[in-house]
Length: 270
Image 1 (tube, one colour):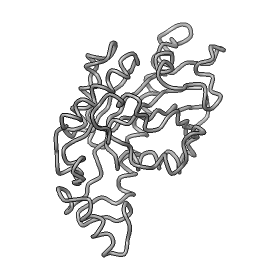
Image 2 (image 1 turned 90 degrees about the horizontal axis):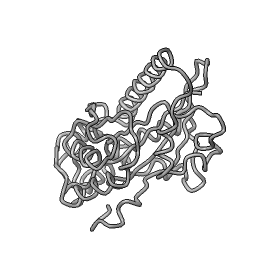
Image 3 (image 1 turned 135 degrees about the vertical axis):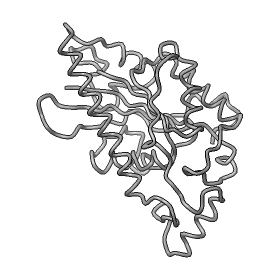
Image 4 (image 1 turned 45 degrees about the vertical axis):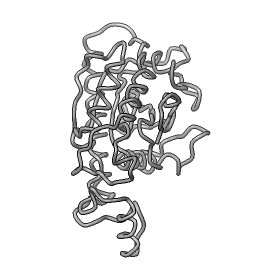
């Protein structure tokens, strides 16, 4: 079995988050003072985790969050970040820069409810899902290709340092009977990927995991919680499993959802 870990973090707070103003893609607002503190706190929390890849949306609030995380890292401070437009927030068209209440009023007038309602010029949920699907398929192909190349030119069993560093912070091997952390001869993680993205986009991505892959959940997480909006710098961790020699889609395990332990010392956590 080939496994890799995917750690997904929402960006830190912006002034518009606090004021409940829709940003989407057209409003490239920087982090607030609280947002920078949240990013630094997430970085300290993840400082001992060894990541092999880092991907971020190319919008300012996610770039600043990613840099805030990596600058606290003991192992990944100089890691190259790949900025990918497929990780951008959902596009909200004419309501970008306007209050969330205006979007809700517009949806009500159309006889629809948020988030299914698509304002003029905005992306549908299916379009956001397709961006998430495209990115995830690209990521899986990248990791499998790199893993095959490493096997071809290396000897012996892969190192277990990736899952060991994750297990210091997250309950690997506890929620699903996984052998990742058992030391029983199971193959270790071949990669550990850090992604920083946005609330509505992440909700769509996690819904894709749930509906298309039947993502397994910890006992403490319900299906509705998996697809709720992640708070600023909330951390979710998944393990992606590929069975050897089988041309089938992977299985996905949710290890934790919207973890906020790092935010206890910040002034605001929303």
